[in-house]
Amino acid sequence: MNELEYTVRYEKGNFNSGYCIVENKKIAVINKFFDVEGRMNCLLDILQNLEVEEEKLSEASVKLLKKIEQSTAQDEEEE
Image (tube, rainbow, N blue to C red; front, side, top):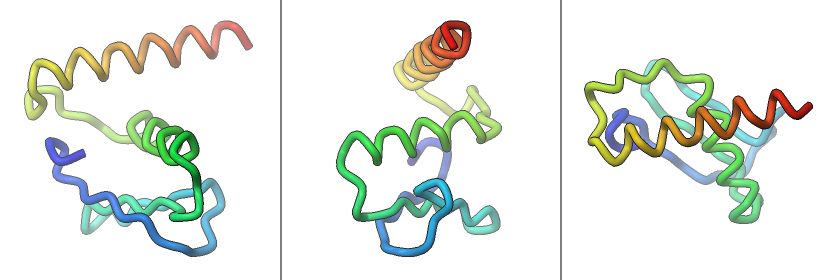
């Protein structure tokens, strides 16, 4: 998330889906009581909802983003 200029914070709170995004400050707040898998799923959800400027990303990050997008598309087709 650093390349996207977002700060990720893990805190407690009332989150409908486990996280919230503070748009004006580019902060993603994830429920700190989630296990590692829950935190990863939140980060994936956040990435899917952000408008990502690929030119800001490293080549490795662009490849990872493409893999995530492909995996998400396959999961949606299977449902």
